[in-house]
Length: 69
Image 1 (cartoon, rainbow, N blue to C red):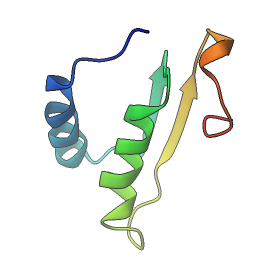
Image 2 (image 1 turned 90 degrees about the vertical axis):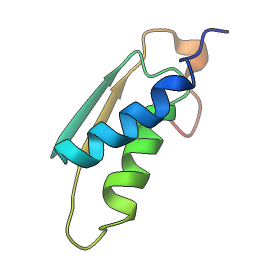
Image 3 (image 1 turned 45 degrees about the vertical axis):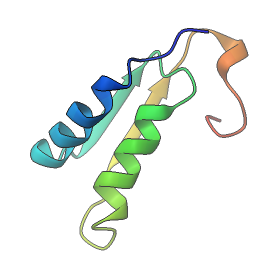
């Protein structure tokens, strides 16, 4: 099973906090790791202030489970 390099996680978290995007599109989301991290670090810390639209697209149906749906 392919997965992202864990070294990317801290870079991603830093960038989403700096950029503070209003929407995120995760293409090839796999198990949804980056969508969950984005939600946690953008909306979890500032729930009352931020509403972030997080969309995901996965082309490999076997990787889509109830959490991604």
